[in-house]
Image 1 (cartoon, helix red, strand yellow):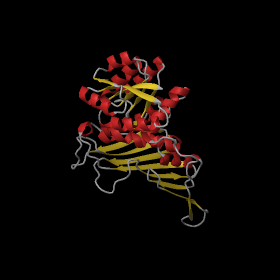
Image 2 (cartoon, rainbow, N blue to C red):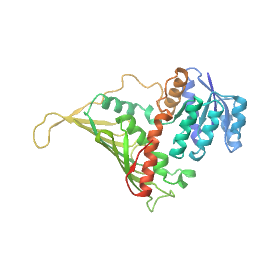
Image 3 (cartoon, rainbow, N blue to C red):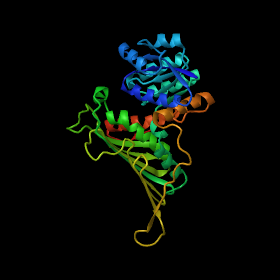
Image 4 (cartoon, rainbow, N blue to C red):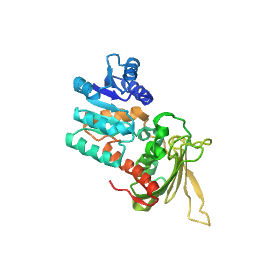
Length: 343
């Protein structure tokens, strides 16, 4: 069994704890031995209600890591604190699983990769979309050539969450805090490797966010593939799913996907006439159900990676490529020009 300290005990930690309960339900794999938060009372409350009755609580991460010597650090802090927290975890001999984004800047992300490599540590990021049945079905269908060679990927994200708290004060809130989920999903599902991006960002007059609640971006990718992203975090009504709404165009046809289990695929039936006749094709079910989904899937995969020595599916060495899309889009919006995506 692996031991862990959880740092960051706000609302997000509740989802992590539910995921850990799922993972431990068929045999205990993880024991939380400590909870850390700047607010000691919050850390104590989380420890008392976590289901890990022997866990300690406090506000001094370095002291707790030094004394408890956990195998893992679960990092759920705000993005501005991530670099310091993850570095502390590595220094204490921990492998680290972080909430997204991986870092607060691309330079910080590159520095974290250097540190983890120097110290031989594992580091992965919660990109929970990779562990949803729908995304695996979409990837399976496309990998098997369901619509031929992919040419275009178009993604729409329109939701209006009223979070309160730090998100409503962030710069570039949609791009920095949320768009990476869709960017990472596009890389995973369609195998995209973007080369450059142009992005327009706005903050509508009705927005309750301080900055950047809406954005539209065009990514120029390898193999002449184009990706577009349109999104808003202040679009009331007719909302998409959190996993976005997709139109993926291939050489033989098109896949419409709601980001979950809603699929419609059509391919050319015969090359005849002005508009070629089409046939609807099935997007096959997965051969087996995922053992764990969402956060639980990411955490279980991270534990498996640590036990087997393989890379995690959401390893930071891969995730930095999705993060680079985010920061290039932000820079493009600021500079009003195409920006190269360079790791």
